[in-house]
Image 1 (cartoon, helix red, strand yellow):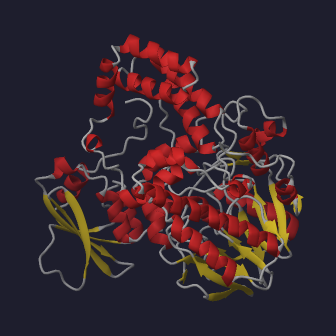
Image 2: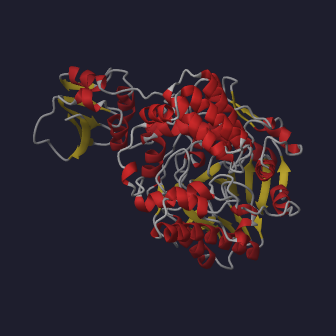
Image 3: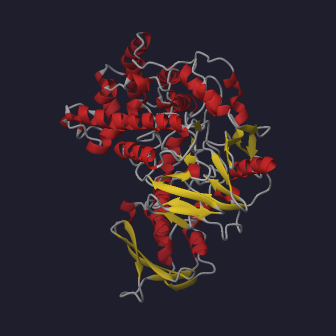
Length: 606
């Protein structure tokens, strides 16, 4: 059984309040049309005592993350916290400011920048840094660099940034957005019984998401760049919290930016919204490298979430414990899987060392020991646990029908589920009721019972994302699914993509079986890139390649256009203003096979 740290330790509260300058009042950010895209004031209830509907440890984390405003980290470095899921950091240079991680939305980033300028002066943005390839660290770029202002402004990012930003936010964007709605509790009311935060922050903003492509790649540890007179020394950390990520030091400020590699909670080895499994072994190794590589050169460590840690020795202790956290999870999972345990069995067996259990920053508010160890198992051995019975199981609905039949029918299954609820075994009650709901989605009694079980599991969860999943599942069982998901596939995002990435975003939506018998070749000649790209739909697969010089075989259709006009074509807006050579009907046929994703695919009901 996990042991909680001491609630009498108020160090985190002191650090979260340190350097406070001013808050945005009211703490609400709106879009141009008046729509609210972020409202931190809705978390005022967290100032009260923890109710029975929340885990005390998670309530404490919410109290810390809900702090909002402009803070001084050290002389010349400031953070705006509490205006989005992430922090925006501002470093003052010789002529203007270098912005680190411009939040999720243009609106929240602009509000954060305005708050800074109100207290520090109207300094221009002279540099932009993306710490890594997740949307909450680049999506608000247009809020700090509006169209027409980016010329001459260096935009720094770790090698591979653009590729991974696309693969995580566009290719699987529909499914990821649907699950992110659960993970972040976007359909839940902010209240003591509803959404009280995410652990990593309070909530995600819902404004305009954009991506201004990097102009400077950080390709190796030790690379040093000077932006507006600000010296920066980089450490590449690929494969840690993101596939493309970096820490960096401001030697003249004696300040170390830790990106999202070390935050005040256990992070995700595999986030519940979905992603490529992260490498906890490499994660620990890069944290250890940071301890040694930057040793003695900083007095404060800060990240793109949560609050800073001051004092060199305190930062070393913090990084050492974070290192040990990911190393321990990795090594013990491997030890137990080599003893023959499955991922589910390991998750029930493994415990953290007492010293880590008592560290607030190692608590599972965002990641969890349970789903992280399963993720490590998945990274090495995949979805299959080696049991032949699990090799070819029925899919959920068919399996559920058979389980309900085995239980003696719907009425008997419901009665048995209620006995598990009464005995306090909510986990198995959820399993039984889930089978009953999948077997009979119209069974209102079963849906109501399952919603109640999810409420109880959510209110008792220390992990914020588990809480939000449970409570969102309960809400959808009662009210039906929502199609209101975060849209990462907007024109601003697509303008940053390369042409191969744009074509990939179409290829993953082709209805393969309907297109089996087609054979279509289309060439895209990009005027502004002086390049030709050939698209081939064959055997239901849309593939593409860059063609050097004149093609060996002619295309059925050639479109000569700019990249901006290509976006319109891919959005189905026709070929007006495009030079067309060949049969335009081929384009219509291609797009007749491109399916629109369902934004409300089932999670809790079929």
